[in-house]
Structures are given as C-alpha cells and as structure tokens.
Length: 112
Image (cartoon, helix red, strand yellow):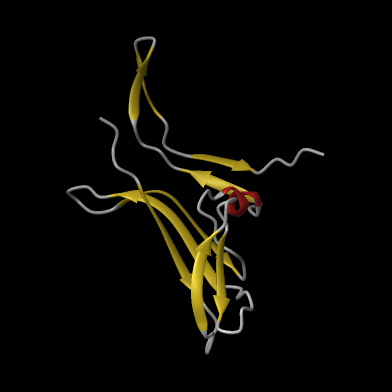
C-alpha cells in the first residue's frame, strides 16, 4: 500500500497585510486578497511534501520562495530554480546487483 503523502504550504505575509481571503485557482495557484480586494504577494512561501513515520516527519520535497506565490502543484516553484539536489538512499536490486543512489545534483536545463 502506498504511503500517505501530505502537502503543506507555509505562507508568510507582509506586516499589517490585512488579509481576508485565500483561494486556490483552477491552475493551482494560491491567491490571497486583503479587505479592499487587492491581491497580496507573500514575503516567503515554503511548499513541502512529506509523510509521518515512527522516527519523525520525512520530507520528500521542500522548496522556499522569497517574494512569490504558492502553488498546489509546485511546477512554478520548480521552474524558478537554477539547480536542484536530490538525495535518495533507498536500495534496490537491478539485475542481481544491489544499488543505492545516495546523491544526485543536476542543473535545471532550459529548452529554447
């Protein structure tokens, strides 16, 4: 059975923001508006996917964006990165050989 994976968005707003409402748009973008109907830009957004386990929370992905918007899908946040790092210590057997991938770093490649 697959593990339950939770999504959390931590959104920091500017001082005296007057936020009144939060909505999720059809494209997954989180929109926050103040009492006058003006859209607010968060000062910081953290998007994380994680699950609970006996020894504590396990993060699968975590990204922080300054002065930007949050999305449910995370593609916009990923597209803003210059590079990303993946760490996975799971061990599997491939054609009789035990393989453990411990670290992978890749630049984000942009197609023109």
